[in-house]
Image 1 (cartoon, rainbow, N blue to C red):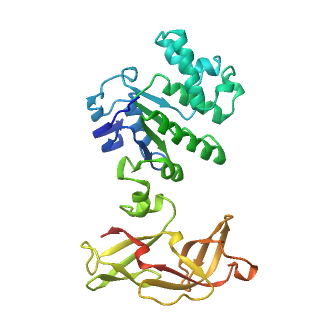
Image 2: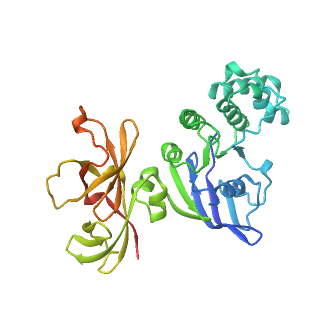
Length: 366
């Protein structure tokens, strides 16, 4: 299996008068694990269905390896889909569910047996070959669906929220296995999810979608650390979104008056000038918190406040720190090094929160 690049050109999709997809342009590389990530209703599953051939685009083109497949039916595209609800045949065994695509093609029985054994081994289900779907767990059913989708060696595998029906721990386990399967078979995976951690964990690249638009395409690190706007910053992980106005420029920095925080310094970029309104992203993990103040430096910004809420998470806690003017900022605080109760940060503690100015990312300018 060699995989295929996928190209989406100027694709629009209407259902009646409602436009679901708005001028989508994407280039997905051969053999890439590519994720479509966004909130419910943003258009990601519709786009997947267009690639599969289940729906026609209202305008625009879909290309696999430079071949225009826009008007081809699903069975004439080298593409298979894994659905959220498994779509297994309840009256067939695991073996026969996986063998079904080859049986349709009237493949010789010996070849069917060899291929089914290979793909059942790939998804770790060799010992369950003679069971029926009703005898399997949700995770096992999804493995069967993946094996069946791969057995006729498509160039592209489409995965429509395949893990969403599973519990959190099993979801993480299967995600790792899915990444391993991708490395083994080497074809193009296009993965639809609304779960940020899923996409960040396994994707070579991610397309962030909202309201029918593709807002940003990039690696997990690029999407997380350099969001193109406040929606992406807020959707991917957690962040503190700050609003400020530039009041002063120097040779290397600008000074901004930020609502509820005061003046902060930012590295100078060509798009910044006095009077501009800024949207700034500050990730909670970038904010340090302690009961004693840090050493002052021109590279850090310090605020004082009170711990208004604590959400304990085992190795770390999420702190909500309220300032004297009722502004609340979120911080992720690691418990490493807290050897006794005196070091613990507790509800209503007076604290100092600070961050390096390089950790504030400019999300929007207006």
